[in-house]
Amino acid sequence: MTNKRQHARLDYDLAVELTIDGERRPGRTVNISRGGILVSIDETPEFGAKATLHIDLPGVPKTCDIPCIVRWSKPDGGAGLQFEQLRPIEVWALNKLLSSLD
Image 1 (cartoon, one colour):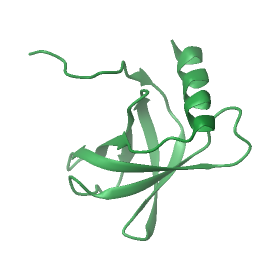
Image 2 (cartoon, rainbow, N blue to C red; image 1 turned 120 degrees about the vertical axis):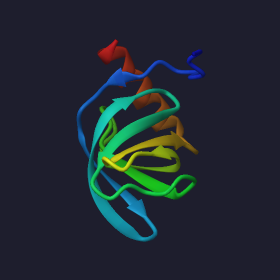
Image 3 (cartoon, rainbow, N blue to C red; image 1 turned 30 degrees about the vertical axis):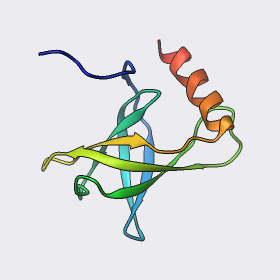
Image 4 (cartoon, rainbow, N blue to C red; image 1 turned 180 degrees about the vertical axis):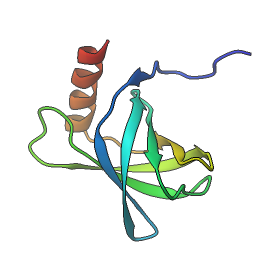
């Protein structure tokens, strides 16, 4: 099977929150890439759901609120999120983070 990912995923563990349907839910990151993130969360969102990821990125003074879309989810609590819009500061911070994990 061919891996269709555009971006390499790197292990990353950090407490985050997701807002889905107006409800804020705690979770933890499992891995991260330039295009998205895998989050471990108790109540898994549905495929295609819109979410906002609340994450602290290095070098950014306040929590980033990143719009995402759920690309897949598992009953055991994992959800794969694709970033929809990253601000320039978030792109810079994400690149800095990924370079440090590489």
